[in-house]
Length: 218
Image (cartoon, rainbow, N blue to C red; front, top):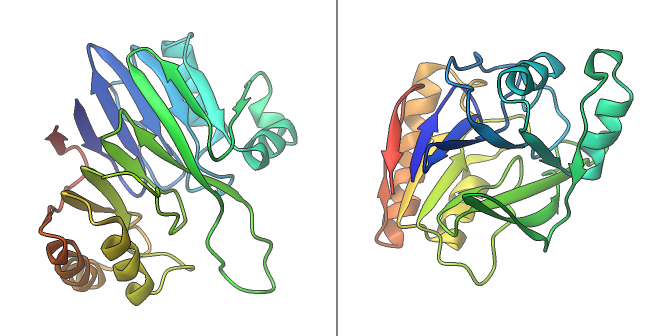
């Protein structure tokens, strides 16, 4: 299985000639390789994790691609005129489904708190093929799972680096790499890398920094 990092929180997972895309949002340049997409996961409704233009373009090239997301995303799409024609299969924490060749398990349920004045929206973390865990915008730990590869958020309005470190410590992945970096300067990213690398190493894991377009094979 190949995991390709794009800008911000966006990933492509490739397996057996097919693709799964996660959180292809407004901070992300749409990759050229969008053929053979069988599924798209949108972890939550914030626009840095999805845009109607990206979803429609992916489905234009890969018309069979199904979109999986929590209820909040389905509501946001239904209320957005630019998203007309986009259909969502609503998923919830605890669900497991199979879209060949990808097994998807969902965790969490809520976005991390930004501020008490702002509503807490639906959010699901997704575990792909029992290998890659993408938490969306949350610190939801996939309880009872040994996570080989963690996409670890590193910068956000809701993120405190100490809490991000605690999240990595709790998951204890074999390998972690940073995502959700577009809100940070280059120097800020480097500082966060050091903190999350330390947290990963406490569980004898390895921390790897991926630039957009780079990949890991599992």
